[in-house]
Length: 230
Image (tube, rainbow, N blue to C red; front, side, top):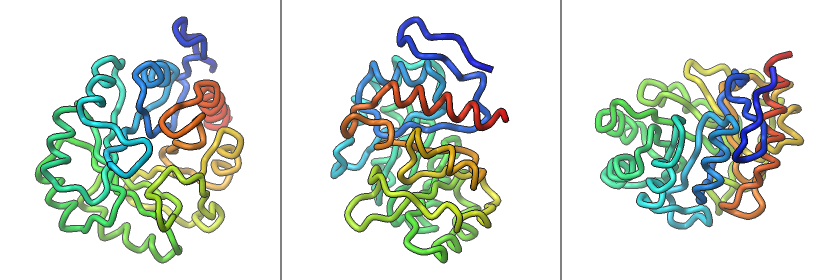
């Protein structure tokens, strides 16, 4: 079922049609975030890592989140102090924390205690399939997993894809997002091989880091809607 066309963006609103979470990450612009939220994305992601070209401050996150309709908003962190995460969640009015570094199980346990009502997402940057063995150890302390492609110098948004066929036996006890090089023109291939609970895109729907291409986002949402209703 195709949704109505949003009169502000001119793109179709597919929110009620989506049965899979679609996370658009690396937002930096209020108008684009509002447009993507009203078009039907499930989650917006904000990069809280200073080294990233998509970095955004907690105050700037709040400028965006206060303008949004109801939608999940995640902050993406890498090896950040717990206090920094707590303060950013409070300031930015975030509903989720994505851990994209080498955070330990003990760290996740502490974060779970500190933020009991916030969704915790542990990202695993896969170099080899054996890296998936860590999932069972983290599972008691996180809500969701995210699988991303490994890059020695970048934490995410690299455009590199995972080996989707090799992940066909991955069935964790917690929900999971597929990330890593997804684009509107290859997400159908990925979802023909895998059944994640959500997908995560950043560079695949951008003009430049932090500058989203709304036409690509609309194409993505239409593709996901078609694939999940056939």
